[in-house]
Image (cartoon, rainbow, N blue to C red; front, side, top):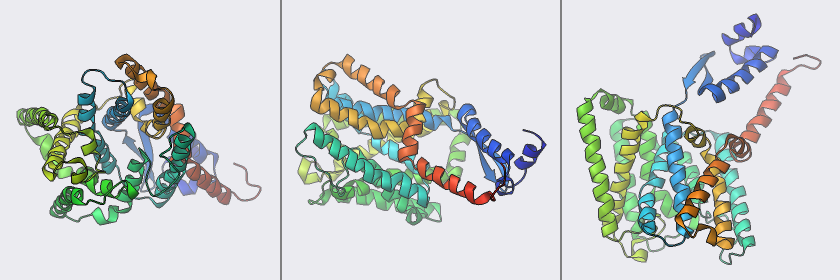
Length: 390
């Protein structure tokens, strides 16, 4: 990069912002992030290289793939074991996704406004207007009832706002917060008035998973003790977890637990189930999360062709697959009549929506990218004196 560029690497970015070397450095930072799986951040005025954690990209792919598959099964034709697969997916996929979201949660005002609140308003209008145009008589544009998949974005925005409340100073305090959230998740089912309004029931019902993920990321001591435990002990515990997972899933299916009971949007009386059943569902989700993030994640710390890239672009898959879902539901349900058709549509949607080009466009429009670009250009304009060359 030249002598001037080398000097910029050891100085604060602001001291070089009027130079071509600094602009080149910014470009190299972005290129480095994309191509090598590392990202450069500024720490104490010097570049700090961070390795991308591929295991979480790979887990994101697994979870978003299950989200899309679950939605396709909802409108697919009848075939053997469809309902069983559908119920198993719903028993853990959203709790696990919220756990993962909690792990990387932090409050940033501009990101919250332009990456959560504003996208929710825009997408709520787009989704309801789109489905209404397709001919669904029950859908109308409104913002107080997050439409379909947008409940997740709405709930995530609420949890992010509550991060200062979640910041318990000690491990004991964190466990108390989690225990209180579990109790509330069980109690909310007794409320006969709950429905989809403001996703209030889901905010309470799914809160423990976000909290556990948020605290798990901070629990370095707990992770260190687990890594320091013997391989035999860890293997036995993971094996026990796998047995418990199978047993709990079998018990839920035997008890007639349906996917609707796992949505967190209906009271016990509405669907004829009890708080014990919700507790069983939560136990099953907890065991699966343990197996995924403690057992499976350490074996996924490498870049897997296609899968890792799709896992890095889950935002467009999440936000956009709903438009295809409703198009299929209302206009072309015959395209999902057979299992092989479901498989083809499933893989096609993941590849179409999860490619890097779609990811960049979606992040720019709905991830706050346009706002950050605008801020960067404004800052660059203020830092350059009239007539100064760059």
